[in-house]
Length: 109
Length: 114
Image 1 (tube, rainbow over the protein chains, first blue to last red):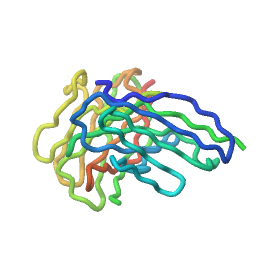
Image 2: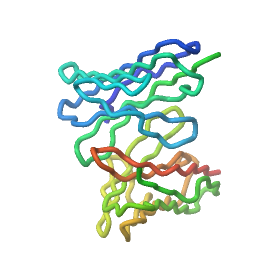
Image 3: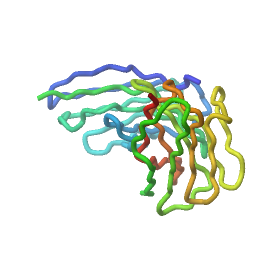
Image 4: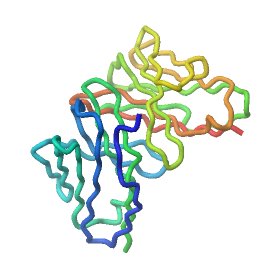
């Protein structure tokens, strides 16, 4: 089931740049939305939840548009350590997560 | 957050052998655990939902007789890949749910079948 679509990238950006990732989901009944970060050969780690009102955590801003079934992640002032794959995730309550394929980000000096 | 461990972290085996992967929830009693598989450059795909004390629920296309899941206690779920073949080589990750639909993932097991 390909319910979550992401631009796979890769996005190559210089340090300090602002980069935005987009994601669309197909199931309008989806209830919860997240961005996860996955480093090479590691398990995914929760970056942030995404709410309709939009939410910000430091340099990271996430937005959800339920009408368009669209989720975004904005990273400001990119750091080298931000290089990773960013996974868009949606779920129903209590169900397992539906992952997008991920968007690869490489921040260069 | 909750801590989930997996063992082994990496395993190399010969084709035709069986491999058991353990997933332990170290500080949470998980009635439900999830098993995912991730092939290179692909997304994590749910294989099955492991239910404590009852049969696992498998996703379409996942052979239940090949991927045996046992969830005998609230802190341990095991996945056994039976008669492994090279196409089973993948990254296997378990998880359980936390609050607000978040998931806590194990560190993953990288299986290579020769």
